[in-house]
Image 1 (cartoon, rainbow, N blue to C red):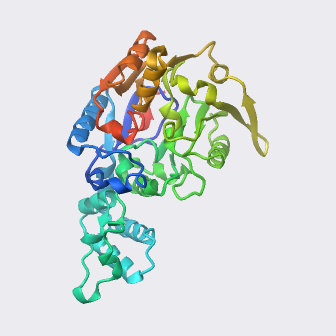
Image 2 (cartoon, helix red, strand yellow; image 1 turned 90 degrees about the vertical axis):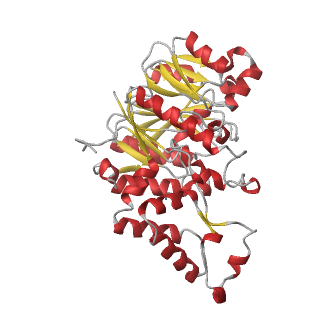
Image 3 (tube, rainbow, N blue to C red; image 1 turned 45 degrees about the vertical axis):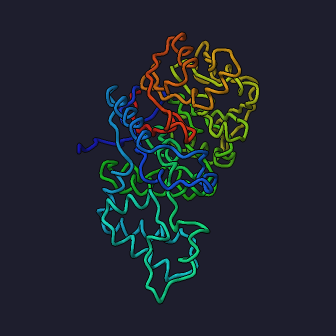
Amino acid sequence: MKELQSSIFNIRSETGTLKTILLHRPGRELEQLIPKYLDEMLFEDIPYLAQMQEEHDVFARTLRERGAEVLYFEKLLADILKNPDVKQSVVDEVADNLGLTDNSLRCDISMLLSERSPEDLAGTLLAGLAKADVKQPVLEKRLSFYIKDDYPFYLDPLPNLYFARDYGTVIGSRLSVNSMKAKARRRESMLLQYIVKNHKRFNGSGQRLWHEYNEPESIEGGDILVLSKHVVAIGCSARTSAEGIENLAARLFSEDEHITEVIVIQIPFTRAYMHLDTVFTMVDRDKFTIFPGITDKVHVFSLTKRSGGITIRPQDNLIKTLSRSLDLPAVTLIETGGGDAVTAEREQWNDSTNTLALAPGTVVTYRRNIVSNNILRKHGIEVVEIPGSELVRGRGGPRCMSMPLCREE
């Protein structure tokens, strides 16, 4: 594996040519979904894993064919677990976070995890640990062993892990390891932080972070769009708090000399619009795609640096704010659905707006969103389609499934 000359991280726009990206190929964690716990695991349906993996492989192959290097989360995790000290630190933190009051049971689980090979442990940390997998002596079985039908896991699976966008975001030359709103996803960020701090591929880049996973204010990557070298947009949503936005903005203003403005876009706090990128993404230097059902429901604010703090200014119009902030004569908002409200809502549910830019004016989308894809083409956007009938069941598209690490400026 080649060594990097400096930081692996470089994201100064949403649309610069993609160079390096982090994905997670869906795995055994999806096979741990059961109907009565779907809500807790943030799912509405149970995907067919084999088909899901085929679709994800097409996605990864598409990225490679367009010149991007693809890194895989589970492989990086297994690599760092080959270091005994890192392995023990991960096991200890995972065991501490189980919420067990029985210390002997915690020790049993910790020992079981420690005895696994790096590859097996990585798989367990993602797929979860069932109560049935923790063998207890016949004469020493605890009550928790018998009450399996109450909840089957000691360590929850991570079925949302393939939505790599949310737990980490590169802004400029540093990574934000995000604080996830839902308990079901917090281990994703914890493991990412271990990876970037310990894997040789990151060459020390993970030692300085914009944000760490255990900070109390929630902020998720689906709400963060790096519009330019100078401007970042952040959605205030059901998953990202106002406090999280302000804290990140303060650090950006203090420690990145290039960033001069954070545009806050407040969207309705609903499952259908869980992140900003489910209703709004950048497809070219001066073009954005937007779900029309959200246009009159957003509130926009401009955050800029001032001595000793942040100035917050409410904005009247999203288009005017974008064109001013990006120093463009005009920007175009391309509405999904082709002007038909029913089509727009149906295709938004299937992530028509959740595009991933491969280069300026070139995006990856799900091919099932026929009308919205054709509208993008009519506006001069090259649309690279991928299958997604199973991937979409988790309620995320190509942008949700990817964490860009490096783009050309």
